[in-house]
Image 1 (tube, rainbow, N blue to C red):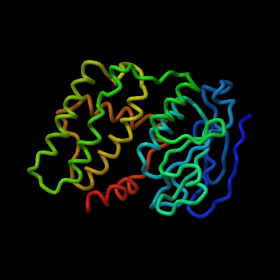
Image 2 (cartoon, rainbow, N blue to C red):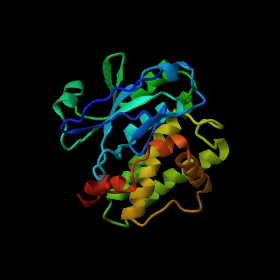
Image 3 (cartoon, rainbow, N blue to C red):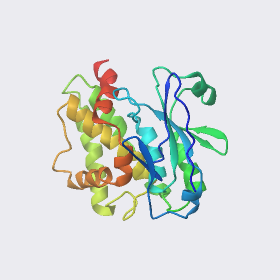
Image 4 (cartoon, rainbow, N blue to C red):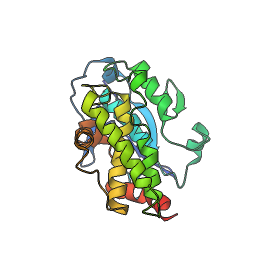
Length: 257
């Protein structure tokens, strides 16, 4: 039987004892949810505690950190129950800074030790919960890795003629061609860690560029568009996605700065 640890709210943190991979919250009630993984090691384990960014627009909601979502997606896909601790990053509580002096999220508690960094956390999840396997072969792990930085460059640009849009389009076109030959996912037929890393970033790109630039992925990139639709429609993504208003608010300082 899985138990949840309830923690009273304190300044700077919103305690959210919701373990999406094993529980669902409806109208204030938390009820166990059946999954295909009931009875496995992952489902039998106590929920992993994870500190994530809290929403800046809606109380007690998950915020817009794509690196937090990457970790949550990994937990969801592996059916690992988790207990979210939503941290107000504008008012970081003392207890949070004690477990992570840098004050960054996500941070996950493994065997009584708090571990930061989404790269390290997702690898630890792969080692600790090997089924289903999500590791991406090394030769494919960097596919699409330049999209996020080129999206940010275009988003921050004040000059429509500086070429940043074309740089982004070039990266997206390269990725679209890759998917055409190797898809539907980066590692072929099955989703892998590289997709779970890229999915939140593409989600931010879609919302932020749509809002601030009135821009969307062109129809000339059908494999990319299909890829995004497939990822965003997965149950794991729907369970962990940030609210549109949080994504918009989160990018506003970079756009206006």
